[in-house]
Image (tube, helix red, strand yellow):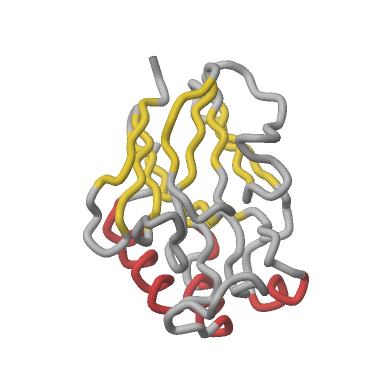
Length: 183
């Protein structure tokens, strides 16, 4: 199974176009969106190319291949523009070897995780800071933000292929962080 992860688009059309371009070339079966898709939020500056309606149109072209969760900046109004569901606070994907618990990060996250078993993977966004690490038997993965990176990091996204989760730079696809998910 090959999965692509993107978080915190915040209405940036150029970031959305880059994400969808990488998705088309990646061979991933699913694009997992970890929330904060259309609105930039009151604490963030406007991202480059802020165009929420156009972002919705672009994302809708891949609606049948998107799994999404609701971010703290997503609303019922956003759902009216999107043809795939975004209002679930979390989702789960079973890979056959472990569970991926998908959430934005404001309700569940590394500091307030849901009940997980050793070997499970907590996938979240929200902080805009990439993370790929194992802690107490749980893999913590955050692909960072594709539009408003923080902590000195570049815009980034994530990939799951085989036994590895990777955070990749959005512009040049360089590996920023990596973690093995299977022993």
